[in-house]
Image (tube, rainbow, N blue to C red; front, side):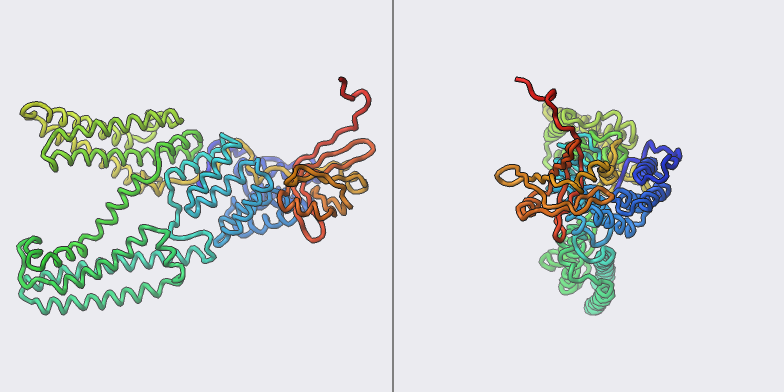
Length: 612
């Protein structure tokens, strides 16, 4: 996934002044991570863990640094330590979910951790973003869009939520569309199965096309009809050999039906292999005895069966290519997606996705212009070219609506991608030429120069397609993103804000610790269906070094925590009282309360009494 890496400061961050303070070491680790210094951040985070092994903030930062270094398994282990020490920490749950999503087979557990983070801190945007990212990985665009919208309601300038919401509007294809990340199987095994199925289809279709070409030349051409049919039948043995060989490479057969259901193009490729085989058998059975002068004559001789089947065998490669170009251009809502990408600028991933989405829009306009250009020769009426005005109107209307929704101005986008500028200019010229042709068709006797204008329109359309090809060749040569959907990437950027899984844990002062441990006046407040309720805590068994309360409470509190884990502890002391807002998690015979916010107040005196 993409992130905004621009503006990183390479200046080293020195150690803290107090080497014995674990929270100071955590602050240094955060600063080093913000400057893209993961190795130095890992050292600082481990210093913090060494000084406070129970501090979940240190374990979280170790996990973040390890993930930045590509050590995903170790990152998961450190995140689990953070959750073990503070199971009620939404940041620890978020960190574990983020680490697990990168591990094969870890999607289900990552989803559970992300949902727990949302439950513990519904007002925070980052847990909602993680839920959206996990849904997006499965191709569940609707659920992802709802999660990103929830995050944006809490923080409208969240770059990752904006960019990824735009991807849901474009119906973005994940990197492995055939694989469901919720499956327990290793994605490398389903990837190998996908490659084997595609290779089988490709090899079978090429083999049968070559065999049919040879049989058609030998039979009708040289009078070897029977021999050609017998030799052509041997190609079917080759099909069997290819099938056996490729089937041996597939180790995830139980998942193949689901893979075909998830990946439309894989299913189409496999289907074409079977269709080509059946069509080849029909070709052999109806092979003409003499060479036909044309496909029409062959159709008349064989009742149309041979000509149609031969077309399927020889020309089947073009069908999926045309279908994919059409589907990818018209899937999703790129104008609305552009508005979301623009709201995240200048995030680097947003800049990239703006360019790709602009090419998607240009592809739609190009296909519409080609359809209009084909109308006059197909209908014999040049006036039908006036449909180009409708295309121009649709483009203008979409552009106006996009501008109102915050889409980026066209000029900066064209300046950043000169190939796109050439393609858009050529499209505008082609539509203008077609409008002239249509207008000339309304004149009595027509316009003798209309033919030249038609050729000019086709030349402009060709130039636009050449610009796309040039941009694609440039991307291939440089290894950069191309003008196609596969170049769209999600974002993990948090902008200038500290990521949720790096935020500090809540500390407790010595006074609050002492009061909670020794006071008998500890009250737990929680929410019930009938409203808020409070009850006295039987005992606070301990307060850990990380600030977690472990207490004994009645059954009513346990039932309430199951419904909503957000609770408030009121701790009193002769000098002050403290309000501790946190998250309660049941474990064994105790409730473990992880603090999120601590408020300390003095008791009001007579001078603080409310006056009427």
